[in-house]
Image (cartoon, rainbow, N blue to C red):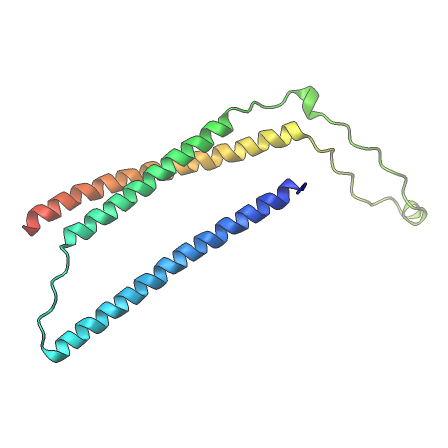
Amino acid sequence: MNVAPHIVNFLLGSFGIVAALLLIGGSIALSWQKNRQRYELMRRALESGAPLPKGPPLWLASRRQALSILALGMGLLVSGSGAWWLGSGVAFPTASVSTAVAPTPEPAPPLLAEHGDRRPPHPPAPNPELERYHSARERLAVGQTAVGCGVILAILGIIRLGFTATERRFAE
């Protein structure tokens, strides 16, 4: 089975977007449902006069957030550095490779020839080496952006862990 690469890229990208939307939408829906059930439980406990349940300490939630942020930052850092490494290994093609000969245009039809040939010029012939170079440049830019975001998130996670330790000390 021979499938065009742009179709495979489109299908994989579409799958990734749908998976991300399902994960994000599912987590939002589950969070909303959990908060709604917690609200109903508290309302019923207040109406019946029962003692309120004691929840987990707040520093524990902060630590969970800090570790999630740190893990996300490290994941972006690793995947971004991989994309950066893959994109940096491709050199600009030489002049002999990048100058491809475009096909000769066919003569204009008689009606266009009378009023002047206003057809757009033919696009240049495809150059796989130049396309490979531009793809590597795009990969390099995405990798650099991911590394930058990963570093920022990792630093934010470490700072948040420091605040968690302070919260725990004052909560006890």
